[in-house]
Image (cartoon, rainbow, N blue to C red; front, side):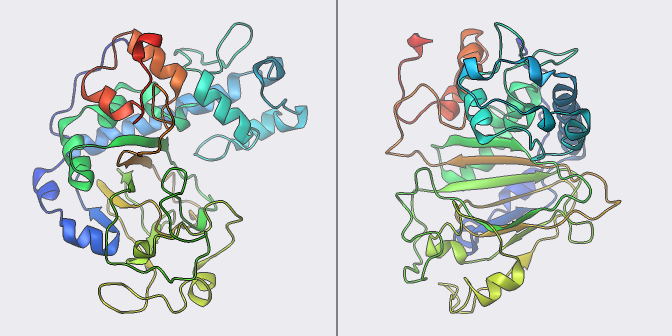
Amino acid sequence: MATALAPRLDNLLEPEVLDAFDRQRFERDGYWVWEGVLTAAGRRRFTDSLVELQRKQDRIVMDTDWATIDFAARGMDPVEAARITPEVKAACCGGSEQTHFMSADWRTKMHRHGLLGPGPAMVTNGFESQGILPEFFPPAYDDFMLDVATAHPQMLDLFGRLFGDRFVLDHFLMLNRAPESAGRTWHAHAYCAGIDEVEDDIGTGAHLTTEFLHQQCVRTLCYPEGATPAEGGQLAVIPGAHLYRIPFKTSIARTDHDEDMKTGWMVGKLHAFTGDPLEIVHLSIPPGSMVSFVHHMPHYVGYRKPGSGVRWGLLMAYRTPDPHAPRGRWSLGVPAEWADRAYASDILRGRALDILRSENPAPLQEV
């Protein structure tokens, strides 16, 4: 953990791109492309950080002797020797969502408590372990990312245009797609515990509305080097689908490609404002751009084509405060053990606390 933030890059975003945001259109279609929003310096900074974070991620995966860690003593699933061979670990490097030897239980435990000492823990070789993988919370390993997530005035301006004055961090992930990455089939996500959704995760389409409901989570993806169908790893959305408030296949097997959606979930569904049948849009995002879209709208990520290089990407998800949030010091998307140490080290103050704290906060004096 850094003890002080590195010098801020003030000219991170292009002001005219921020000012072009059309709130009415965003609420109508459920997404907005911030085309060319990164300055040249901002694009380099995002790319450099993502490259370095991937290097740190790969070093932890490869250099750690996972067999020496007493997972059972930490209340975690044990690891089988066949899942941590050098060949398996090597296949987990180079991109995000590839650490297949780790169970969901590992990630949850690391998020809450940190995989630190006493005893053997993750090996970093040249930088300090934060008890979690960089992929799952980049701000823990990178001052620039921490500034972007919690404090940079231009980023807070961008998020404020999506939410207004009050928003909290839902989750913040590295999403680098290596060549031949399979991408992600059609799916969506519920707002927090899902009590604000109106149907099950398949949905009949009976609850179409023109109202952009107050309880929202919005995902903002940053692509400093772009993401296009020509290279793969591109984002696809269904404009207007968010107005059904159906988090499609949020908790069941995700098997649907475009044709499955067209002959299944999309049949008979209309855009609430235009009355037109819903259509799939595969976005072509130029370098230095971001795209924000509603969390519960169905979305898809394309196959990354061979020879296309890594698609560098960052996911920044924020939400309006959840009135039903459980009591805790930090938002559930914030690694609690890291946040406790960062607060005790005087790294988290001011607006950062507002963004990272739970909506139903326990006293920080307990840290």
